[in-house]
Image 1 (cartoon, rainbow, N blue to C red):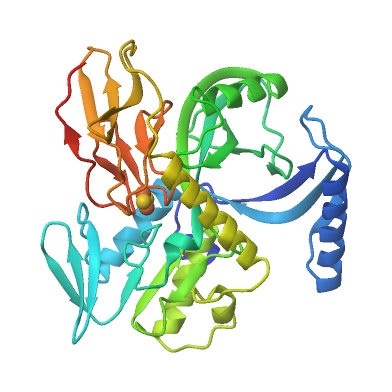
Image 2 (cartoon, rainbow, N blue to C red):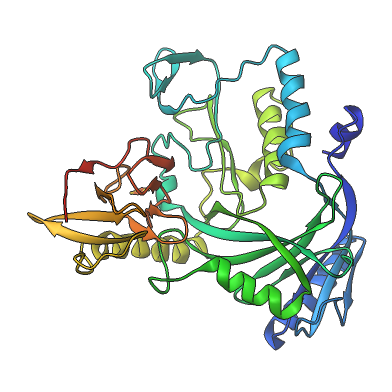
Length: 401
Ligand code: FES
């Protein structure tokens, strides 16, 4: 990444920063010490333990790693890379949802609007793979959502990228933004998609409370959320989909480390397709399955999915007193219906059965969406797909209160 930034002179705030893991728990403190010892044994330079961090957050020990990269990927970096691709005659089709692959005589990618792409090799890099080819990704990954707040502070940012290893996790870093003041980024409050502790959980308010306790806030400026998939052993699946489809490749399960893992995927898949030796091929191989701890995780993931499947089929509460900007579920002729009342008192009713594999979606009050707890599909309040694996909207229901 650094080489690309230098080669194309990309102005994306690339800089070297310390990355710091910290904990306030005795058991985790031991983990950090073991990690530091592992660096020494392996000859990894730049790692050392410290007793404090420059924020008033309770902590017992921190592990610092020097010389880690921080940069701004979405616009500056990606824009230059896209321009280079276009110069090399790569074609990019936006708003074209790939929904399936036929892999018989030819390999054909089918799209939602009926167009086909015939190709030699296909890389499925759609976060959750839109094509599973009997590789059963739906049973080998789980989706989670996490949240970020951007704010300015009365203090100067002290440098560093921080991540606590206790629960709930929080991360802190900063970004230079449009030549203005530094924006501090506070992330955390992750949870499995479509699964909430309480009906009115508001991760942004929880983050704000945490931020106000430990930082000198000048102004809250931004908020956004992200969705990520975690594999059974927490290492991404990157490589050939399975033996039946040697010309179809997958890259998924980045577990919030997309900036790094996407570069790994690009290098690894290039090497596999051009038949160049890459020592990491085995490590990321999507077909791997380790008996332990994979098996335990595999069972707990799928028990969780099954539970959500059954639980979701039960409607929750009365809808008669529904307030504006709120949603509930109700039952008509045995069918569960999600009902949302907007601020103009218009009712939007949908069949909350997920169009991917039939789990029941749950309401997300913070983002006003119907989220599927099984594999992370999300739909707007009126049923439109926001993110897959589902490719079809929820069915609208004609319903009046
Ligand atoms: Fe798979 Fe909903 S995302 S059933």
